[in-house]
Image 1 (tube, one colour):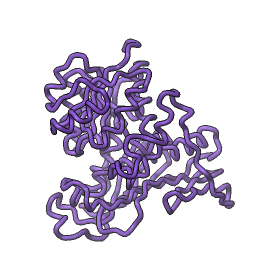
Image 2: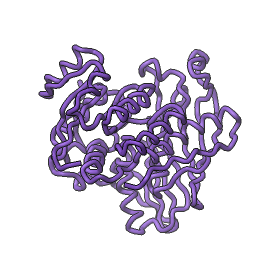
Image 3: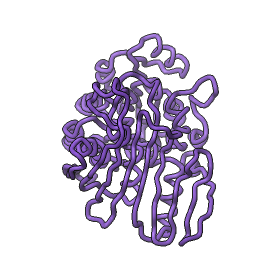
Length: 372
């Protein structure tokens, strides 16, 4: 793309509103349009942020030739359909997690990117969190030595969330724990085996036919001696909210804190040491650096559920926006691109299938894109 500002449209203005001021201040973007079905809410957001183009119909938005890229923040069952429509309409896509709910939808998105040359990026927060950036920096400096094993968990109580979450298979929303164990070694999952454990309330089971309280999955990384383990729970499991990952290296290992807001631990050999995780705003343009520690949903009277439970997503939002915009401007693939996003997402989809079949090994399909 040329160096002119990239015209962005944000779809879904609950959690999505958090990204509006980041795009507005980013030197590579023009926050061009917003879209939400509720006309009153859409116009209220548009007025609050000074955005003139306000849509209530996604299909109408896609007809606007001035829009270069859409950032989708709608309920998960809409992600694939809306991403596919956008790519067919000639728009680049940034989409909140997960990419899709079926392997076939993931395949369609990858194939569309290959056919059109357009860019897709799944906006996975954990792999741009300050914790992940801290461990990534250690790894790239050689401080961890050889990675020997990775583990991650995402435990959350979804009672009180919108109805479509009720009874959702835990691994269908697994990208927050799958993402970091694949992103750190820049690996791909080759196959998975997953077990379900426990049982959720009977009234929650029929919607998705998934009985398990917890699903735990082993991932074999392709062309590697590495394996990883991820654990996910959504209902009827006592645990403080936790998005975590642990990395075990030959020289040093990193273990996420057991209690939110306490310090994580680095093991050097057999010697443990608590560590304060620094912020990584210095990696960003100064215009958006403050958004690693503040945003739309950071006052007591104005909080989104994902922030109340998610601890602000580790300051990841401006890093995600920056990666997407820089990739578009430089004509390179973002991380994760469509193929990588499909691999991350399909780990969860196939892990649940494995759990329903008593831990049967499931191989992931091949997802490839021509190098830009």
